[in-house]
Length: 251
Image 1 (cartoon, helix red, strand yellow):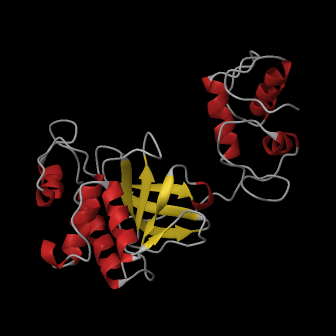
Image 2 (cartoon, rainbow, N blue to C red; image 1 turned 90 degrees about the vertical axis):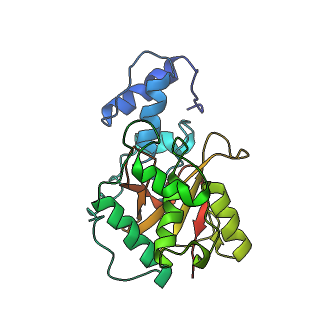
């Protein structure tokens, strides 16, 4: 079978769509590799393995490994155990990292969120003010920095790194201190680590960040602000994290 991408057309695209539908993924069998087919392909890749037992790359391209997996049904990757984001993990992480995570959990329990509009409200102001910014700005990095400030007794000057309102600035801080761990390094994050992603462009300046809550059964669980309008828990397949820039571990 040929490698198929978004925009392709023909009988092989139709065959791909039929296989996706047979496996329970929503695609229109119309012979056009449209957005719906691309989304179904990515969803399939995120839950299945290749012939070597390795996770498929989630890129929305139907190459040889994806074709093989579609034609040789395998058990789905294990469904993760439910995690209680409101509880601090029993072990793992550094003292300051765990304290920062405890602060994040406190904000989660307090239902910290945007109030009165996008990137607005008292919680957002609280996270951005130490960086010299007012509401109306992205606040994911401000939230992470604020948690580490609380872990430092509420003293900005006592923080282990500079208070930042930019996800990529946080990663730069970690690199300068020798605390960063790049994707593919084999590093397994621990509670209280900081995870950083790129947004829009790998070479750009936009990013997103959150705090690691725990890792279980190959799943990464985080607490993040500004991915949604509130502080919230999220989960990811650790081996297939899209747009990952790395992890910061504050010792």
